[in-house]
Amino acid sequence: MNKTLLAIVAFFLVGGFAVYWNATQRATQGTGHSMIPPDTSTLAEGAPIVEVALPAELSADAQIGKRAFDAKCAECHGANAAGQNGVAPPLVHKTYEPNHHSDMAFVLAAKNGVRAHHWNFGNMPTVEGVTDGDVKMITRYIRELQKENGIF
Image (cartoon, rainbow, N blue to C red):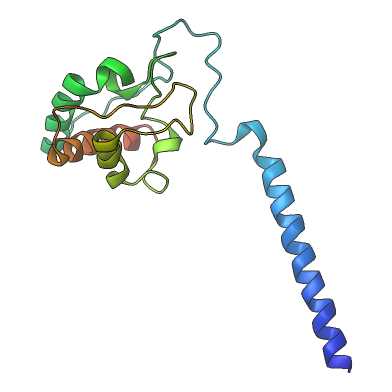
């Protein structure tokens, strides 16, 4: 009987700790959590949303990706993927780090479009005229920009 009682008490202690842990983690994330989009209310329409530090040198794949990005993505996502206020989000942002949005997520977004879920810019349409290979090079460019800006 004592072992059963001990098991029940341990169960409630562990369960109580788990509930407490989850509650405190949500509270500490608040508005300072890095996945929350920045306040853009003071930015002019079309202004870059983030400042992007550029790498001293891009790999050959990233150079190809930059050309494709400039041709197909920059119109909405801005120069160097800094975003444009009121138009589209920055891709050089913690929201798009590799462990949250894989490289394949970029391929699927270009191919299928994306329902708005992190930002309030509306849905992203499909990107016409790019191949999976093009998007992989674009993603290489974005990843190198992210790395230069401390996003891994």
